[in-house]
Image 1: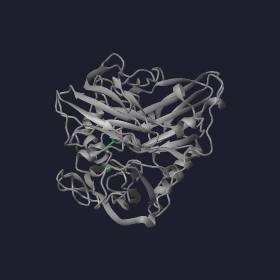
Image 2 (image 1 turned 135 degrees about the horizontal axis):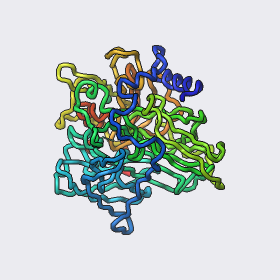
Image 3 (image 1 turned 60 degrees about the horizontal axis):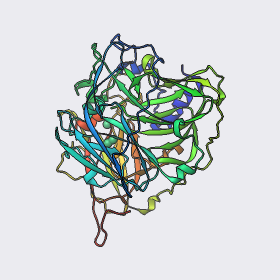
Image 4 (image 1 turned 180 degrees about the horizontal axis):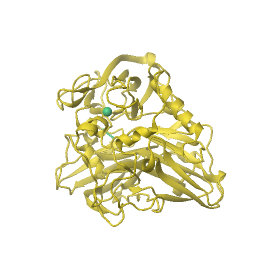
Length: 507
Ligand code: C2O
Ligand code: CU
């Protein structure tokens, strides 16, 4: 399954981030978190279910400036495993929820109704939105209630997603299915000859475990789950296990989102061919990057172009996960079934990005991610989440360097070091995009040079990011996006404050 080149690439990718002590990934270690066959016996044969593509939600109303949407979060059922119905919670009862397609510069208002019997919130991940629409954990929509979220979309084209963010329960709620895509398009993207329309396909990757009756088996947050987050033994793409997409022999653009609670992936093609990465969390990269292996930690996105013209009709190309074995190594397949003309291409310049000059930073803050053994809580600077506490007050318009360090030693648990599992903390900031300055003192690779909202910080790593607080003022979250770490304390607040004569929101 793993070509030698992919193996070396994977090693190189990790050694760039993990320093000299790197042991090449022990793929078999995945078994510690369920790398064998799924425990239940209800599975369909792999690569038989067509890839579902979440439907695009229609606005209920439009005016000069705004598209208005309505969604209801409710319980539903989904055929995922053979002969059973899996109870889910979904936006509109669907998992993933319907996709919202937005236009940069045009506002979206979503009225969310909670028809579940638990309090929820809705967060637009990657959205530059005022705090009142950010869906913070305490800003709950109680059962039977509704809330309107306003998304200004004053930001460039990007693959965003929305998901529940309820206090202490985000892991469970997302696992039950409360997530969906939110795509922003703009003129810069329109003008590029990248694959569009039906050749532009979102892929939400999640892992799930199932009970014998077909229901999701969300584990209690203790032991291994507290350490590594909830990890299932089955990978779903857009809510189906190992689906199949019939493709023409041409280029496609895929927006890969790691919507898993905690599991990181290293994606590769079974053919060994490279994928062309054109975008990340914050949209288009300055230039395309050829990658044979693409690692995504929880909540990260990669937009890639895959060119199927290299394959004969009848070829099957499997999207693999190099961090898994067996079931967990096969994500989905592409079957090249027909010939088609292709007028798309990947230009050598996508969207220039202004690098933030570190010399403009007014201060450097340290955030040490750790674990409080005594209380079984994840911590930032020794403290677990307290919704009354503000951890940083950056001044609007200024730039800061934030240093996120992960002191977990490689040997905190049994087994050889595996950078994929050993307490990586995908660090996420709400309300703003940032740039990665360095990782253990080294300049980040090209694919991390775009705008990011989530960055993976592995064991024994320190990642420094540059943040220019030029979005809205007010209070936002920062946290680890391993949802079970987040739900067990690894979350804080920052408040963007104004100087005199400087009033937000600003754009
Ligand atoms: Cu994707 Cu605070 O979350
Ligand atoms: Cu974490």
